[in-house]
Length: 92
Image (cartoon, rainbow, N blue to C red; front, top):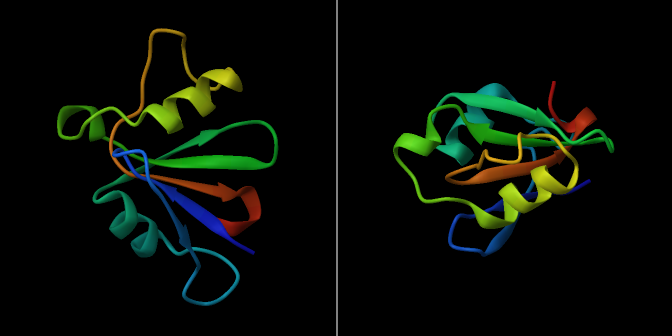
């Protein structure tokens, strides 16, 4: 299993749950640097975003594009900051 951290600078980083199976809340909060919100993509994957990232971080173009392609956010909306792209079962 592997999840990806989509960084707002356009780079990607592989991330792995500490326990080997699923991410705990505190791990996800560290990755996105704050309280989390979940966006379901409807394909078995989710985006884990910073709940108030828009106020503090640059737009994450890759995560925004992904969410728009899956109609998971409104066409005028955007995602900011670091974003975890995980499979549903990786987040409990």
